[in-house]
Image (cartoon, rainbow, N blue to C red; front, top):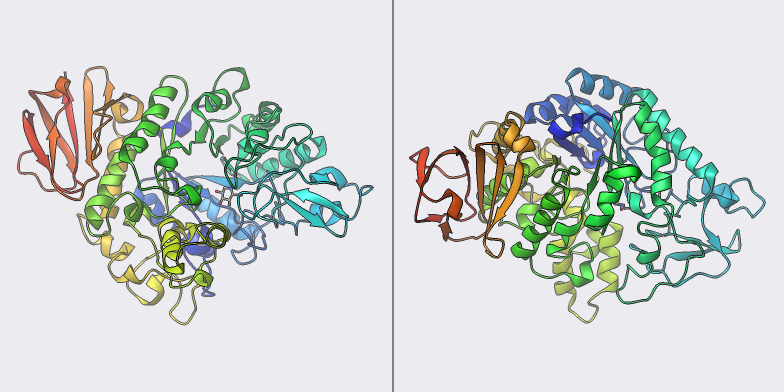
Length: 552
Ligand code: NOJ
């Protein structure tokens, strides 16, 4: 396919919490429709919809019970078409979440499959008389006994998310049809959920248990037919010039290169998880304090590793992670760290994804009891790990790591429920109490807001070939408080300097820049001089970022 995606930036919508258009307390397509001009104004070029299909919501949409429809909470196919048309009119592409590693256990295929071995859908799922020793990522062991069929089925995620048997050609045909259904409607591509897990090793051998939750992964990550199956799906997308970004949990750089280049090329981009491991929230039981050095190492690994060969999918937030200001920055230096974090990744090489609310610096929510949380993995983590610790300590771990922090209603203004829904309605989930301070309306009116900073970064990126296509180089990788990198194209250079410290830190310029004059094109602090001599030592303020432009 053509590379139109390279100059783009995407906005991710997790619809349930985005905007409620019909006043029932749940976000919906009507709400999205009304906010399309806002998304356009932000300066992105496309939208990724997290699943909006019918689902019993055991995993909020990632357990699909009908692939070719819209969840009644969110609207109808007609309403979706209206959103799609309007988005296209505004020049926004739209990509859908393709979740085909598993379905809901309420999907008609599963309801049929469990009826027995002679059912036409019998082999749509992975059934065994005896389970192996694999763990699921969300709910204990990866096998659940089904009394109707009298066998166990595999579920790599929750019990209500049985894994599809992709070795069955009929299942792959169904996937093709799902893709065609949405492509025929006019969507522009897919974000493909855990797409590196869809081919399991023949015989499903036992894993060697060494860490909880991931036992068995070696036998289902990048499995034996993974490129073959994905190439089959790729062919469909090629017919439509559609775009594909794969989610690749725990994928390594060499294996990502196989998906992205050469004869196996079956995806345009892949979301790496390496930088998410710098504090390990994804595997909550291993959580450790954030290490900037580890984070930078992961970012640089992918920037250098894909340079000239493939293209990065850039992200810091999505619906699976806590909010970045609370995670990598500081709620005290809220604006400074929120803006610095924007600059720190929007100028890397790749296509940025911005998650709803990230652009206004939404922060983590801290609920008083585990029962108040909705996310299945938060609940499991709480009830499984660190059981010897006090409840307060365990709850604190959830405050730090929960996916629910990304799922609180979007804060549009300072009216009741943050303007997410009408005052009379009860929002489906808690609104963060800080909405009077952190909301879209306030930030639209403030020139120096996080929101306006995102807009500026996106504009700069879009209008600079160097920022889009220039090479990447990192400086001082061992510096524990600053992330400094360069983008270069011919004689044009950008130097991006980001402080991750909540106090002033000494800044040394990289030797190649020492003594040169540079224009300060962006900073989250006021500077008197726009043209500066990069010389000697200076100080960075807490969470300061600076972007210099120069030629040599
Ligand atoms: C990855 C998705 O991003 C996450 O939200 C979901 O729970 C799992 N895949 C399972 O579908």
